[in-house]
Length: 349
Image 1 (cartoon, rainbow, N blue to C red):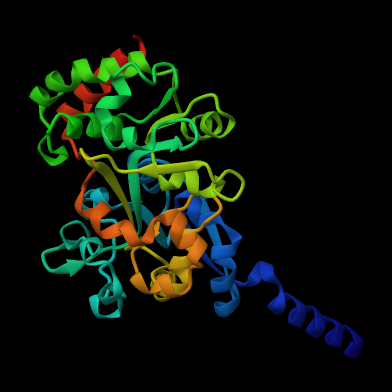
Image 2 (cartoon, helix red, strand yellow):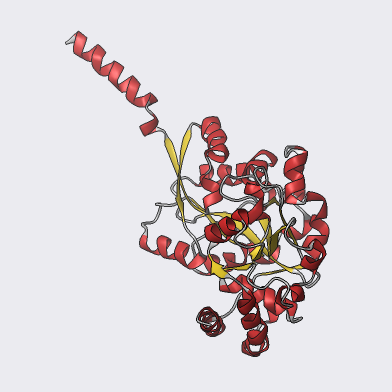
């Protein structure tokens, strides 16, 4: 009996130490948050296992939550322009504004208009970057990349890939025509239809991230419209000829936010994870994630990133890049449908 008791006690001790019984945090994220180099320091420091589920597109993320049980998810990464949708759906918990690192942010990246509602903070920006022009600087005249008009001048016909995402590309073409993304209407689509089709005619392919990235890296194309640091940075070590810029007409600025879900079973741990992600250390790791790179919003991450990493991210040019960029269009249902119809028509050309 004593022997059995001792054996049972030993088994209980082993079970208590077992990673399977460690505290767990469930995060609905974009692929850059699945990198072990980002997660493991938090897991080790807090004795926790972070379980991640990757999704693409706000609609897909909201659908996952709709099919989940309350408490299934603790943290969510979401496009900053869509935080309001999640707030309206009653999905997000209020965050203690005085415990966020926003005082250390690039001023334009606090994005209070997106992340707060009625004076309450529901999310914080964590990373940003640009959809713009990526290219092989040994294959093009770099000065040409400062003007989107050169892409349809005939000089680069058949050497261009278009990133296959309608919001970004329609936004870029709108900016080329002098239309602000925040002011796009059905009339705007009429104005950008011809230049959009002209860009398609000059292009070799319209393709997803991986295919566009591969085509640029292998020399199948020399330019990716809609690319940026997120497309070229992970390839910089092996192919330093790949570069990106924001043309004079401007670029689209993407920004992602992180939030705690209202029904989280572990709100304190979830808050701690948000604080880690927005800390200088978390920001440096997130900025250089193996999935895709992007600019950290916390300026103190610059003390941790190497000079080489900061050069790839174009750290010193961020103030001018931010000033010459606009956020994604956020269309209502009718305009979104019209945008997708125009995109489909373009693809079929």
